Image 1 (cartoon, rainbow, N blue to C red):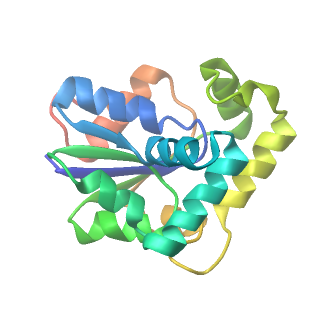
Image 2: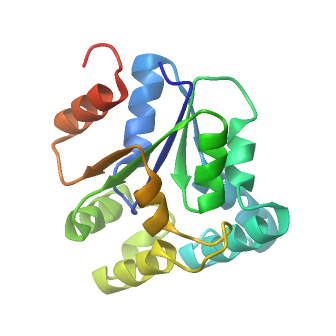
Length: 183
């Protein structure tokens, strides 16, 4: 069983859903880098809206190191599933600690519906166009390891899950890809 699994991917792709499954079925600890950023954003700005989160994450990565959120997530017991990997520095931190990277994606219209349904951080107020524009900012924002760079994280990932699945099939496919028992 891999002790560190980094789950990267697009908004509402299923990263936290799979991490919850790893926690329930296999005893993984789940750390969301997004939750770490939300906590800092609330302390520093009193807001967890996506543009504020983007600003806070970018600032922290540039001031405290490109892999700061993955480093914080690794402080604790293992096995651990770390979700919300958004910079190459975070992806490299996972790899440097003998972790495996999984990139999860699905068609944007499906992910938008999931985002609306989960109703987190006032996301329900944005249109599909705004959802798409926000995602584009994280797909690639620069060459630094601290910049948002889903594009290159996807390229360096060990496992790519890039289509829509039923929940049961999604869990089964990833379990099998990771060599977990019961798959």
